[in-house]
Length: 163
Image 1: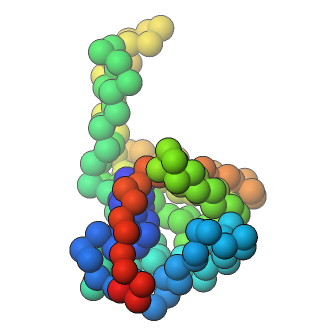
Image 2 (image 1 turned 180 degrees about the vertical axis):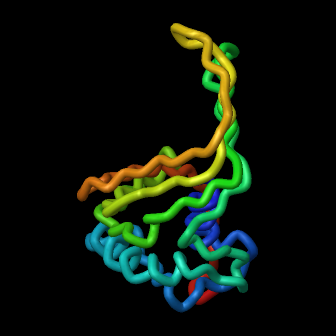
Protein backbone atom coordinates (compact mmCIF):
# COMPACT_ATOMS: atom_id res chain seq x y z
CA UNK A 1 0.00 0.00 0.00
CA UNK A 2 2.87 2.38 0.71
CA UNK A 3 3.98 2.08 -2.92
CA UNK A 4 0.49 3.02 -4.09
CA UNK A 5 0.50 6.04 -1.78
CA UNK A 6 3.96 7.04 -2.90
CA UNK A 7 2.90 6.81 -6.53
CA UNK A 8 -0.15 8.96 -5.88
CA UNK A 9 2.02 11.55 -4.16
CA UNK A 10 4.48 11.59 -7.03
CA UNK A 11 1.70 12.17 -9.52
CA UNK A 12 0.05 14.82 -7.35
CA UNK A 13 3.25 16.60 -6.47
CA UNK A 14 5.58 15.91 -9.39
CA UNK A 15 8.37 15.56 -6.88
CA UNK A 16 11.12 15.80 -9.48
CA UNK A 17 10.03 19.19 -10.74
CA UNK A 18 8.79 17.76 -14.02
CA UNK A 19 5.70 19.04 -15.74
CA UNK A 20 2.51 17.18 -14.95
CA UNK A 21 1.83 14.24 -17.23
CA UNK A 22 -0.87 14.90 -19.83
CA UNK A 23 -3.25 12.54 -18.03
CA UNK A 24 -3.08 14.54 -14.77
CA UNK A 25 -5.27 17.60 -15.20
CA UNK A 26 -4.88 20.08 -12.34
CA UNK A 27 -7.86 21.76 -10.69
CA UNK A 28 -7.85 25.31 -9.36
CA UNK A 29 -8.47 25.04 -5.64
CA UNK A 30 -10.07 28.49 -5.39
CA UNK A 31 -12.79 27.66 -7.92
CA UNK A 32 -16.21 26.52 -6.66
CA UNK A 33 -16.05 23.29 -8.71
CA UNK A 34 -12.69 22.21 -7.21
CA UNK A 35 -14.16 19.19 -5.39
CA UNK A 36 -15.98 17.81 -8.45
CA UNK A 37 -13.04 18.67 -10.72
CA UNK A 38 -10.75 16.64 -8.43
CA UNK A 39 -13.03 13.61 -8.61
CA UNK A 40 -13.59 13.83 -12.38
CA UNK A 41 -9.91 14.30 -13.21
CA UNK A 42 -8.88 11.64 -10.69
CA UNK A 43 -11.20 9.13 -12.37
CA UNK A 44 -9.60 9.92 -15.74
CA UNK A 45 -6.04 9.59 -14.38
CA UNK A 46 -6.37 6.28 -12.49
CA UNK A 47 -6.06 3.94 -15.53
CA UNK A 48 -2.82 5.66 -16.58
CA UNK A 49 -1.38 5.59 -13.06
CA UNK A 50 -2.18 1.87 -12.74
CA UNK A 51 -0.21 1.12 -15.93
CA UNK A 52 2.85 2.86 -14.50
CA UNK A 53 4.93 5.65 -15.97
CA UNK A 54 8.69 5.20 -16.42
CA UNK A 55 9.22 8.94 -16.88
CA UNK A 56 7.91 9.56 -13.34
CA UNK A 57 9.42 6.35 -11.91
CA UNK A 58 5.99 4.89 -11.16
CA UNK A 59 5.97 1.09 -11.52
CA UNK A 60 2.90 -0.75 -12.81
CA UNK A 61 0.46 -1.05 -9.93
CA UNK A 62 -1.69 -3.91 -11.26
CA UNK A 63 -0.69 -6.21 -9.72
CA UNK A 64 1.18 -4.33 -7.02
CA UNK A 65 4.35 -6.12 -5.88
CA UNK A 66 5.64 -5.31 -2.41
CA UNK A 67 8.84 -7.03 -1.23
CA UNK A 68 8.25 -6.61 2.52
CA UNK A 69 5.88 -5.08 5.06
CA UNK A 70 6.77 -5.09 8.76
CA UNK A 71 4.08 -4.48 11.38
CA UNK A 72 4.92 -4.07 15.04
CA UNK A 73 1.95 -2.47 16.81
CA UNK A 74 3.58 -3.00 20.22
CA UNK A 75 6.51 -4.75 21.90
CA UNK A 76 4.51 -7.99 22.17
CA UNK A 77 3.74 -8.57 18.49
CA UNK A 78 5.74 -8.56 15.27
CA UNK A 79 4.37 -9.50 11.85
CA UNK A 80 6.44 -9.59 8.67
CA UNK A 81 4.83 -10.04 5.26
CA UNK A 82 7.09 -10.79 2.29
CA UNK A 83 6.83 -11.22 -1.49
CA UNK A 84 3.36 -9.68 -1.58
CA UNK A 85 1.36 -9.57 -4.79
CA UNK A 86 -1.73 -7.39 -4.41
CA UNK A 87 -4.47 -7.75 -7.03
CA UNK A 88 -7.77 -5.95 -7.34
CA UNK A 89 -6.39 -2.43 -7.35
CA UNK A 90 -7.31 -2.30 -11.03
CA UNK A 91 -11.00 -2.56 -10.05
CA UNK A 92 -10.79 0.60 -7.92
CA UNK A 93 -13.34 3.30 -8.66
CA UNK A 94 -12.70 6.73 -7.23
CA UNK A 95 -15.68 7.63 -5.07
CA UNK A 96 -14.53 10.85 -3.39
CA UNK A 97 -11.51 13.05 -2.78
CA UNK A 98 -11.43 15.50 0.11
CA UNK A 99 -8.62 18.03 0.54
CA UNK A 100 -7.73 19.68 3.83
CA UNK A 101 -5.09 22.20 2.82
CA UNK A 102 -4.63 23.50 6.37
CA UNK A 103 -3.76 20.05 7.74
CA UNK A 104 -2.13 19.00 4.44
CA UNK A 105 -4.19 15.83 4.16
CA UNK A 106 -5.99 14.27 1.21
CA UNK A 107 -8.69 11.73 2.00
CA UNK A 108 -9.30 9.40 -0.95
CA UNK A 109 -12.28 7.03 -0.97
CA UNK A 110 -12.11 4.11 -3.38
CA UNK A 111 -14.64 1.38 -4.12
CA UNK A 112 -13.14 -1.98 -5.08
CA UNK A 113 -14.77 -5.15 -6.39
CA UNK A 114 -12.20 -7.34 -4.68
CA UNK A 115 -8.79 -7.23 -3.10
CA UNK A 116 -6.41 -10.18 -2.99
CA UNK A 117 -3.08 -10.25 -1.16
CA UNK A 118 -0.80 -13.25 -1.75
CA UNK A 119 2.62 -13.76 -0.23
CA UNK A 120 4.27 -15.11 2.90
CA UNK A 121 3.89 -14.23 6.55
CA UNK A 122 5.88 -14.62 9.73
CA UNK A 123 4.36 -13.82 13.10
CA UNK A 124 5.88 -13.81 16.56
CA UNK A 125 4.24 -12.41 19.63
CA UNK A 126 1.56 -12.65 22.18
CA UNK A 127 -1.98 -11.32 22.30
CA UNK A 128 -4.03 -13.48 24.64
CA UNK A 129 -2.05 -16.55 23.61
CA UNK A 130 1.40 -17.10 22.13
CA UNK A 131 1.43 -16.59 18.35
CA UNK A 132 4.36 -17.96 16.40
CA UNK A 133 4.46 -19.25 12.86
CA UNK A 134 5.12 -18.67 9.21
CA UNK A 135 3.77 -19.78 5.88
CA UNK A 136 1.84 -18.76 2.79
CA UNK A 137 -0.52 -15.80 3.03
CA UNK A 138 -3.80 -15.44 1.15
CA UNK A 139 -6.13 -12.61 2.09
CA UNK A 140 -9.06 -12.30 -0.30
CA UNK A 141 -12.13 -10.10 -0.12
CA UNK A 142 -14.74 -10.64 -2.81
CA UNK A 143 -17.65 -8.69 -1.45
CA UNK A 144 -18.95 -5.96 -3.72
CA UNK A 145 -18.57 -2.43 -2.45
CA UNK A 146 -15.27 -2.95 -0.61
CA UNK A 147 -14.41 0.57 0.46
CA UNK A 148 -10.82 1.66 0.93
CA UNK A 149 -10.08 5.03 2.53
CA UNK A 150 -6.57 6.45 2.21
CA UNK A 151 -5.41 9.40 4.29
CA UNK A 152 -2.43 10.90 2.48
CA UNK A 153 -0.23 13.62 3.95
CA UNK A 154 1.31 15.99 1.46
CA UNK A 155 3.69 18.92 1.14
CA UNK A 156 2.30 21.92 -0.71
CA UNK A 157 4.65 23.21 -3.42
CA UNK A 158 3.91 26.34 -5.39
CA UNK A 159 4.69 26.47 -9.10
CA UNK A 160 4.45 29.20 -11.64
CA UNK A 161 1.50 28.99 -14.03
CA UNK A 162 2.24 26.76 -16.99
CA UNK A 163 5.09 24.85 -15.41
